[in-house]
Length: 224
Image (tube, rainbow, N blue to C red; front, side, top):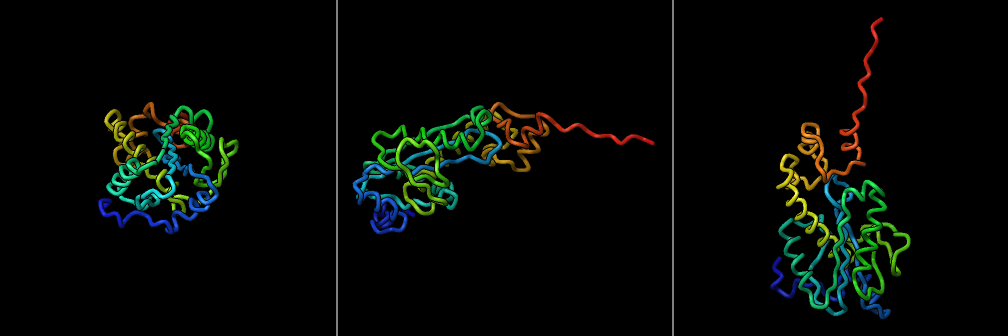
């Protein structure tokens, strides 16, 4: 993929623009796709992004971030940010907030904040399930990052931003392997928790971390 070749940009009739085309035809010019990265990890923040392309823009060949290599995601991140007329927002929800309100509510909070940070949003396309009390009219799309260019772009921005954060954290806490596991519960990560305890960026409400903080008492059989 070379983004210097304009032929790789999404044509107006591309399936990933189907939902956006409907909204644009209704006169809604600022339609934001919203997605998150980092719901499942044991450490690090949740990151939520919102992206709104303008009708008629040359939109990069975005896709679900999970299907892309790190190099592809980075190339697309730059292309998204440089798309004429694009507006976007990236929000982080820290581990302590996740522990206080739970990951579902943290995701909803992040999605609301990401959209509110974009001036003039008229409609939002949300990856996954509906979000209560959303600040603008919205539509939830299950697996939306594979069905909407705006959501796919948001997934790329959220993923690349979070990965860079975790790479920074890996320099402060190298024993956990954050530069490779990004905070997910790999064997290396779990072994490090068992050996070193937890770091300040661990999510204390997530079971493996919670169990490390409050290990179950050892039950001993009584001799008869």
